[in-house]
Image 1 (cartoon, rainbow, N blue to C red):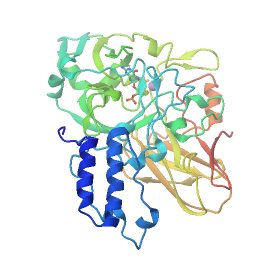
Image 2 (image 1 turned 30 degrees about the vertical axis):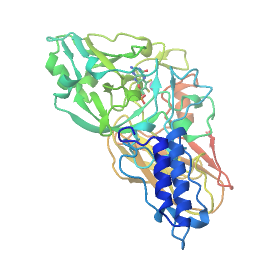
Image 3 (image 1 turned 120 degrees about the vertical axis):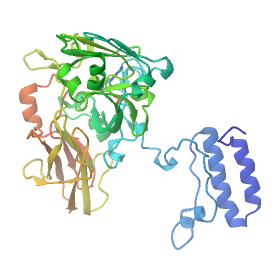
Image 4 (image 1 turned 60 degrees about the vertical axis):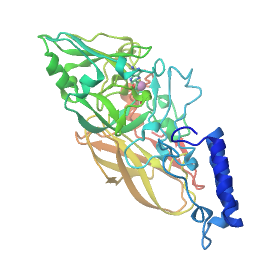
Length: 438
Ligand SMILES: Nc1nc2c(c(=O)[nH]1)N[C@H]1C(S)=C(S)[C@@H](COP(=O)(O)O)O[C@H]1N2
Ligand SMILES: [Mo]
């Protein structure tokens, strides 16, 4: 028997032993559960076959009439097998291959403002490197007095901070510039996550190395096969940029940059370089691939706008949505998420008629700067069709634009930075579709 975990054969013999000691009805329920467990261990999840009439009141459900699983059957906990649909997904036509690609956070299924580590969207330019933290170094050099090569242990000796911040890929919603394409909230807005990040302020590390005269930009380079590289203005680096090694209380996931990544709160996700191995200080930007050919905004006059760092104020209704339709008339809590790269969300308005009338939503729970903010609006649905919208306003007074307003400035050639008001069409049937209105 392996440590801390039963092999399928062990489970079967344990099940048989235990079942023989039980009266018949209990034995049946127990065996079904045991087989499901053995099956799960052998070949992924298999749902226990439970007669629904057995489980419902006034009957005592089978799982109350038998013993449950013991401690460390699953040494690192995983969600219930009944939550198997709550997963990251890809858009096949967008996913040329899974090494240089993107997966989406299942926003319709999330509660509160924290994205669980296993569900954070992934964006790789060259796949996930398997980095041994003992072999990993962070080099800081360039216009500095005392260049440094830090081990992970060195890094962890600096004073750390923990903050809750969103990360959004600037391509979030980018498939919708020319028209509504995606029939799922997971795909219209799912290049988005919000975690508690722990690490060292970059300002602390820059103080340690000592900046030389003329220092104005920081180059951040990843240790992945893409060696993804971005230029960050020193002003941001000294403000709230972090070098983080933990995410929601545990080490970064490999997908998120294990063992260490940069976090530029509120800025386009691309600048939060994962698997961070090098920081170079210079007097001007480097104009790397990811800040010239990519991650620039093609404007209507054919010029490319560079360094659009801030993720502007945005919001979306997460219930109802295409994946979560309404099932009957009556009282509902409309919910959604709002966020701003400029700071806190001040307020969110809801429209049920495509932007003609607006009503104030309630902000729920924590309202933190540069973090997802959950909003809620109680509504009695009488079965009529509706055009549901949310409009966020942040603490700087920035009002989320309509699609028409955004297109008037940006045209339709862009890929990145689409933060316009989103419309869900609710049909009499309760079904929800993705539409665009003026
Ligand atoms: N080294 C490296 N860093 C990277 C990337 C990458 O491919 N390599 N992708 C970037 C992009 S485009 C985004 S949107 C974010 C996504 O962060 P996540 O995968 O943790 O969600 O990481 C950024 N950092
Ligand atoms: Mo991205």
